[in-house]
Image (cartoon, rainbow, N blue to C red):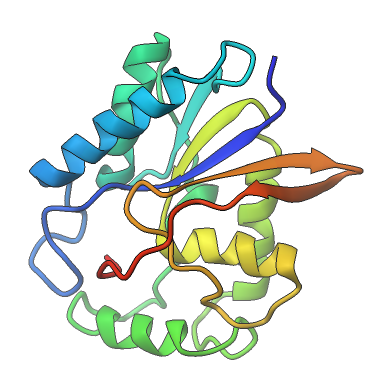
Length: 190
């Protein structure tokens, strides 16, 4: 049985930041990406493929996770700890893109908001560590939280995971260790 952890960014959503839908699902390209990542993970040797599926509560992640869960014959487990970075209270849907651009250009210590974002990224990493043997579907900034933490970086963006980018981790000596970096691209972050 695998002790690997697969961390996958959601597929291409049907809408982007600042558009009317605060929780978009996948567009047709995203649905195709979700099917392909499920096929890729199912093609792994039985001892290497994930045994269960975890997703952020947001629709684009749940829809990306579902084909793999169907193929494995399991139910998608929803875990808010691997969800999108929390928006400060009082920020409108229209203001969120400006805030996110500032976040992505800065450091974890410099994020302006109403929670401790350094603690938030540590919580994402802890949640990931508790999922050995599984596939976890998450978001661009949450993935960067994990990557920057294990690299000892304070920059928010240290990796640009493409849609359905799948990075592989293991737990070694009680710490999360990256064993294979997923695909990077210049896709629009949404």
